[in-house]
Amino acid sequence: MGALQATVFFLFLLKVCEINAQNEDWKTATATYSKETNGSIITEGACGYGDLHKTSYGKYSAGLSTILFNKGSTCGACYELRCVDHILWCLQGSPSIVLTATDFCPPNYGLSADYGGWCNFPKEHFEMSEAAFTEIAERSADNVPVQYRRVKCARSGGMRFSLSGNSHFFQVLITNVGLDGEVIAVKVKGSRTGWNPMARNWGQLWHCNIDIKGQPISFEVTTSSRRTLASYNVAPANWQFGQTFEGKQF
Image (cartoon, rainbow, N blue to C red; front, side, top):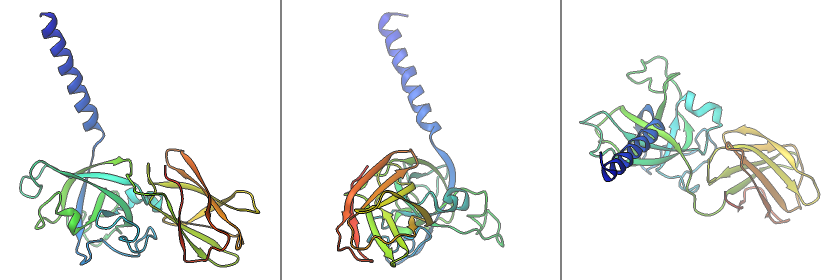
């Protein structure tokens, strides 16, 4: 084998190894869609995001089965999905889309996992919007085989902090999180306090028993990859419950 042939063969092996490494990232699951007239899978879902269009997730949202939802800790995470292994249902070329975990797909143990009980434990399943589903599969399809993998979340603008509660109970909904998208720890700080750890209420709603009215507010957010980012003075001293403020982005 000549030098040129050896070089070409070596480059070929590198390419094969690269493709295999990429394929190892993919896992198998199934997907269905929910018919919603506004293009979202749901509003007021199990992650607490409310109107998915206002939080920028819109039609590219997904309800996750129990094993993927992980009691809400996966809310905000991003997944790349593609329909595979079905010549009639999957679109040609297996195009992929990126979805944000926004809701919980509850199990239905009255139905089999192959017919209706898509989200029964330990099935890995995604319930998508009809609009997103038709970008990877035929609308007439029912339950399609897919491959999925976690990807970084591409977000426009900074993280958003929506405030709620009362004088003794402070709560924040965190949305539009880049990088992992999955928040695992939050701290809040007033101008006259130190950093106070917050507990997960449900989904991506975090709370603590503190009165910081009349103080500028800062937040420290940690993602599942252990990256931490502090956004100082996100809300001014005259903030009110019901308002949303924008901080930094990963």
